[in-house]
Length: 190
Image 1 (cartoon, rainbow, N blue to C red):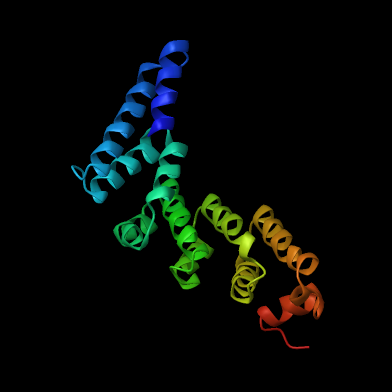
Image 2 (cartoon, helix red, strand yellow):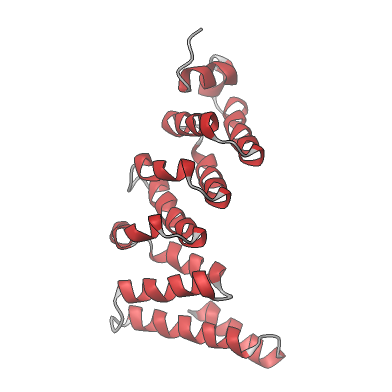
């Protein structure tokens, strides 16, 4: 909240923010204060964040706040976001889910439906979010499986780039080489 309040002060002092941005910043601060003081439920805060992600000009800030409050309870509250028609909302859900995956709180299976999401932005977010965990066998296999069905060349390139990092970075990656691991992960026979 301190960061948001500082941004508001700077915007107002320098005159670089229009009224809409300042209003959205104030709304976020009020929602956060309400949540912290227990006057606002987590679901009500999530509604404010979703509105900002969909219609506001501070979607990036709303995503940062969402990641901060993301926990097992939050991911349950966000379940409907995973199927929202707006790709920005699905990406917000994905950011929370991958954070919890990184922390070992949710299984990789929770992310499976996003492998074939209709939005390339969502699929790209999935690859980017998982790429730091590619040295784990289950993530490697997950991305290799995604590579098998992905049609967009830019996303395929990101997957291949992530998968190739394993060979350079770990002993398990060098064992059998990247092609050998890919073949095993994708179920190919020698």
